[in-house]
Length: 500
Ligand code: MSP
Image (cartoon, rainbow, N blue to C red; front, side, top):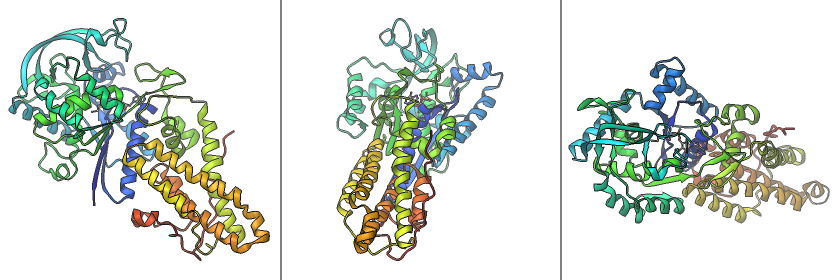
């Protein structure tokens, strides 16, 4: 049995969850579920990034202590993931004791291994990014992401000797020992090495809401050093029980947005090497979306609330709609008005209609009893399975959705070509074969849907009498002909009622 460790970024919770935070979480969920379907031992981690000046300031504005505020907001994120049927195995909060213990151990390790020195820092700090920017980063004197002028900060800090580790990190990225995907993002990261990447400070003396350094309590850990270590702390780093760390580390894939590429692809591997730990195997960098052509972000206030989407379309459709807008890994625009149109075309008229049509025909022509086996669609279905698997092995979630759509289209085309309602009058033997093929195709569609729309998948498979599909191994599930002749099927209730 293989193991699969997938993570999302841990989210800043100074605002409510939005579809920007739902997007990588959903993608990671699809990957986690796919690997569970394959029988892998999966660890899927998400969480909340709760320290830093920005959090403290937002809590104060809300009239709360930072901890009270974080508790409320973390609960909202968990509730949102729950409603979206996110199957995370753990949720790590950076204000938890287990996380703090890990951060302290990690920073001590860096110091012990001579990767930390004391220095003076003066620079332009953007609170939105929680990072120092250079003049070169600015557009019209402002941070291009948050559109605010950064503050000039000067303070004593402890620095991480990044320069010492850069050649090794670059080598590993070059030869894909640390694989950065898609290729365009790997090139972007390699391009960063040509610029002057300086050492960075791992502590702040002006920030109070954070984890004090073990050897100098006047400083707290820099929020990015604090945050990145969540990926190992959730596995027990810094505690007495490192069973999970030994089993799951290094991560098979960190999912992250392109805004935090430098931290994950350069800083994090360098710090891991310095601390004597292995580096992540894959980092999948997805693009950013705009909404109706406008940049979306907590700092800008034009967010789409995932709770509203769930209310309007249901959890499964929200999952589908968010993940299928554009290729995972590229930037794209979300047109909110298109959601209802796409819901009707792909789900109500597409998958939902196919499922109810096939099960109704089985009911009408064979009283819901599965006819004798036929294998007319076997080869085509096998081909689509291999596209589906290749997509998910390469973290291409949107491509897996395309493969599912192909199954649906194959089925719709097969119905139109064979016109079962005419066969019912002319050739009942042929009708039986056609209905078997359609029911079996629907079963494959149900299995392939499980990582993407779990509830829909389960409804489809239940109607086909396949309630126990999770007990079967993936190789068996993909084989054509698993649906037993003479077994009983039921009509599918409407899966996606049309929206006006
Ligand atoms: N807390 C840090 C991450 C620390 S990980 C060790 C952070 N948090 S964040 O909440 O601001 O953003 C987290 C991620 O949300 C981004 O990297 C990205 O994956 C996702 N997105 C936020 N807005 C988005 C869009 N508009 N579009 C797509 N993804 C977006 O950075």
